[in-house]
Figure (cartoon, rainbow, N blue to C red):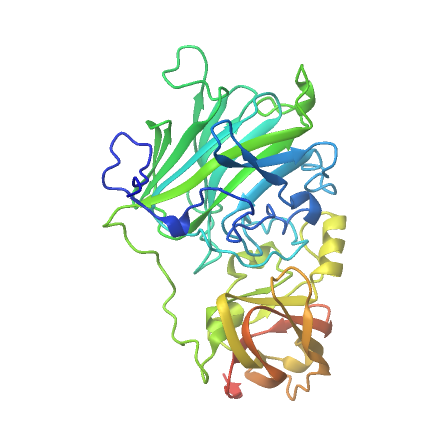
Length: 458
């Protein structure tokens, strides 16, 4: 009988290992539950791609090694002055468009990132065993973001921890995107500390997430506590940031003597999740419709419409599948970023509405609703699907005109679109906007098999 996996805690008897939410990183391939791009919605797609390999340790064990390829890798946001000295290697246990966005609207979205949520959960003990290089300009991090299941505002950041290796400084950060104040518990490691030197090899970092608090552990010792109630699902991110700045805390990778190797590494032995028998279950929306013929399965989808500015950012999501055919989701031709960001976004992403599900679904009908349809709604579209949501998009409904009949703001007009061939086990779809007003709008999207369209009056 195999020995049960336990967390590295002084009292670990009640914690139960959760294999479906954990990864031992045994290779040879990265588990497909991880998104292999690090916040690519905001950055250059190739620069955001995770550089990684599986390595064999001296004891024969396998570990995942993330690395920044200093000579061969581009900057994460080369067009933005604040980030054009920043490179990154990272994987994320959840992903979607408009993740990690501040109320001001943040950067314009420059790439679509498919929906991932294989590691998202709520409450428990989360542990990572890892080692990293020391020196100026490096910031490895093990952190969490809200999955934004029910609302855009469920997007708090918890760094557990972020390490500035220049001064061996550990930051336990709580960074709300709105509402409460940020908190940061900083621990410096040096002579006289009861904890081990973080630069001497593997160490274990743990986050205990309770309904009333967060606790950071290092090598089994409690380091810091933050009293806070976070009651929605979050997902893990594992990342290494490379900086070429004059920031006093982070430093510059080129200030190291001797120089750092070209491949700046962050090595992970495992990521483990534990829960107790009485840990509350994960919250899920109260869906009204089953995934069956005759029902609107768009209710269960994440539907993204690009182009919101800061004034509308807090209500970006949910408008196109909230059941309200008069709540309008509209888009703007320009964003709040730099000129290059705005142009990249307008040329590459403005024309798409992405529709993605937690699991594969079947459908043969798409219904679009709009108010003031003739003057605000798209006029010509096509529908495409993809097996992975990244590329290889296949047309399932070729270009066609939308024949809207009214321009009345008090009428939610619906148009029913039948696919030429019913789709089976699809998870990633998109509507391509070929022709539309400069600022176009829709009020609702319904999707299903054998579903009907109606017109609604205010």
